[in-house]
Length: 128
Image 1 (cartoon, one colour):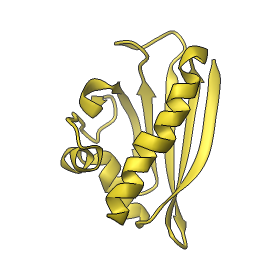
Image 2: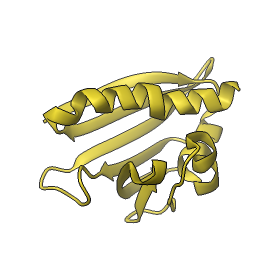
Image 3: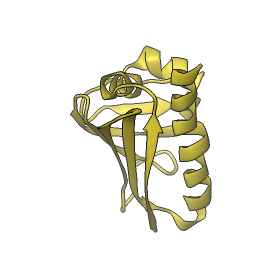
Image 4: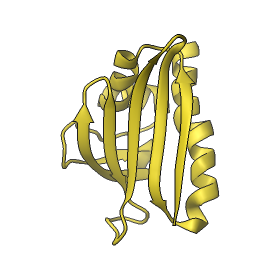
């Protein structure tokens, strides 16, 4: 199992980025795909038409989102926890992405996915 941490700059204020991460209609706009999401702890979610599924654990409005991501269809013995922290930055938002307990065989694709699909789509959403 591996861990991942990286900072990305999103050209929008933290309040806007938080809404994009937590409001189902906006999630569907920036991902361009189906999503099921309720911004409440202990609710399951689905992004990119089921490509990412998991459970919401914690919300701190405009500052932090904590989720458990499933590899396969359900929770595992060693949960993969995703923490997204939003920090003010002179160019908008510094998005701190931290994910723990990533299966070794998934690590490379997951890191690529964070950079090019997940955060890349958010950056594109605010720059187009």
